[in-house]
Image (tube, rainbow, N blue to C red):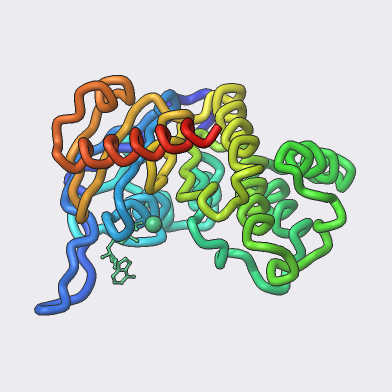
Length: 268
Ligand SMILES: Nc1ncnc2c1ncn2[C@@H]1O[C@H](COP(=O)(O)OP(=O)(O)O)[C@@H](O)[C@H]1O
Ligand SMILES: [Mg+2]
């Protein structure tokens, strides 16, 4: 299949439960969702509301307890069933995890970023790899001196930015970011958000941006989904949700946001 082909990810009644009996937890209540390469969807909700579980199911890191996920009509389970189609899926959909434990502890960052370039984008020349890495590292304020480091040799914020670099170089059709700026210094958060926004626009990628608060999400996405205790309590365009929140929980979130930005304003 070519890159030019339309990209559609559909979730039909997709839900997830963990544990059994008394220990059963509904992480995500069955939901429907359609994501295409034009989508910019922000997903917010307090900690434990099921955001990461939802994102992880979209890339096969968790298996749904109910429902079906399909990409261009083909079930995700089939996409993931052979090495070749698994790579094809990873070329289309990249997930930047909330924690950065997905790095191989012995691998240098240079290797971690060059592997997907080679494997998923077929970039062979070392010079080309280096120049693509330099370009993205520069935008993410990552010093090239860090390329030869291993994940434990840098700060959490630097690791998070390398995780982002590793996915951005793939230029996927859908980028799923899970709390990617939460661990960053406020001083670089804005720059990283700008970078994501620009990449998404330039490469016509779809974006799902998971965060626990509103500010980053309203900056980066045009649509919003609010989750609470595994349930989608509200969805719509950012403009609609912000001006006419229907669910009391969304109203609370907005009120908290308004009062915190007022305080910020007061300090200036
Ligand atoms: N691997 C797991 N085993 C058991 N429970 C889990 C697991 N992962 C998540 N959960 C539970 O599922 C719920 C949703 O978690 P999560 O998707 O991480 O929420 P969020 O990303 O919104 O903070 C929480 O109650 C969490 O404790
Ligand atoms: Mg999470």
